[in-house]
Length: 240
Picture 1: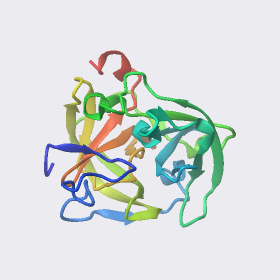
Picture 2 (picture 1 turned 90 degrees about the vertical axis):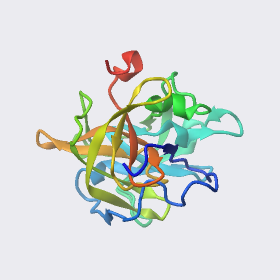
Picture 3 (picture 1 turned 180 degrees about the horizontal axis):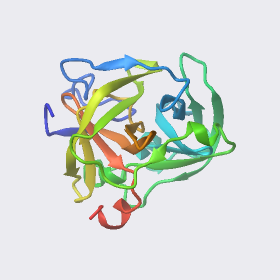
């Protein structure tokens, strides 16, 4: 990576010392994608009635994964009410394939949005939608193990500089595993991705299908960042 220092890719303004586009680096490797087919047809914009936006993705027709920090309200110290969250599948320039409100929101109890560096490995939220927005052919598989260094991956979302379309780095790799401040694993990668990509899936094509390895939650000062693993075992024993 260009730097080992990670910063949160938040849906709010950042400190002046942080570059305007953390995670991109000197060369922008992102390109526009076609939202009609997988993996992009499983991705959508997570939009709240308070105006915040991040990226999310389907793991079932009524189940969306995203980053928990996108749904936390610092002023109240609570998460936004589920019914104030919308998922717009395959959103692009005001058009989308399907839409539904959330009816339930689950965040791991280990995640502390006021102590992100220590609990980043748990920075994930599961949204349950009021109605299906896809069939099983338009959802992503979830990895059953942590990836090896060098695994080919892609990463794309609704980022601050192109918020109306998905742009993706199609040629990046897993760099390895690192630990958050609490000693739990994060998947590090060299993908170009900046603010707004929070909640996007770190994707790999495995066994003939697109598989989500983790949820984008952190960015470097230069190119790359880190994803929180989707493995249930992370919440139990840190993946050991």
